[in-house]
Image (cartoon, rainbow, N blue to C red; front, side, top):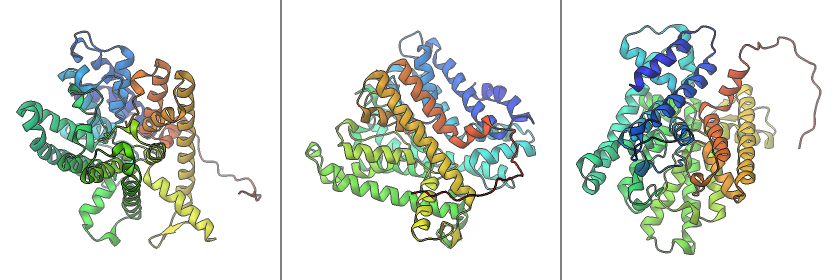
Length: 458
């Protein structure tokens, strides 16, 4: 049903020659959110007959489509089986990208994909060229479903003994897709609402499987292709894949060491064993990749750890992935550019290659947009609901980074604050430059240039 409605809604945009790829992407996500909102408002979408209110349905549909994980209603205890299925489908389509799933529909239906549609696909998955884009999309879909299936099979061994065969199977599929798509939605609320995976802090299987799915989903489709084609021959990878893998590994290692050596040595975590502390530190360094699961109570974490989590959430995953944030490549390009300035080099460089100037310009623009909207959103929430600024900034970072981690305030926020979070989630998923390109489409690049004049900075 969702497939047919998505195809009917998306077809006019997909075939139009007057609509830019950026507009196709942002309108496609908007249509999916509205469709999800309508389905979640149906009477049988909730356990109590009557359906959700418009704002609850809109917030949940936006969070699922933008693979964020922030919720105002506990997923397991509030939504019925049908509602949970709608949420899962929104996560899958939103995580893989509306355009990617539209391509899958076209491929399965045997329809021809023209040059315009290939161009849109290229923009959607951040591919370097149009050539081979359909084949690459097929590779993305097969790899994604294989990873989700493998994750579900392993999770069955933990969930079925505890919840029974059918519910255990459903929980395994749901959490595998949610983790791979970096969504962070969970079904553990029947025992304790909004508890996420806190009951599994010492379970190595749950921790390692969920964390692995998060990382694989967050490194990006092009990186998968490099790994598949070149295996362990790291030197043959694209420069982008090298930057993504090294930056991701560095962020994970830094977060793990900080949480293990500082946070989980604090008195409030004295009840955890050494093994549980190691697993918790590992998981909490992975989940800000924009996943949204947590195995410990985040409200009990110290302010330095909460601040580090905010910074990791803003960075997010990698381009062309299921993750959000301003991306690891943006962070790496800015860092490399700073190093180039310190060393008095004319351009940033790494792995024997120079970073192109347009990449630095885009990185600066993206970083500025994310910081601007993050701070504005946090301050607005603080002023509207009179919550501590750290709590407001944490929720804002979680929304714009499409993470889903929360200190427990989302469900208590007013409608205005929720609307702020909805905008941040939408902005974080479609991407800052995509939104700008959609608004400014049709403005040609000027051939003339003004004369240069030096400006002193710093």
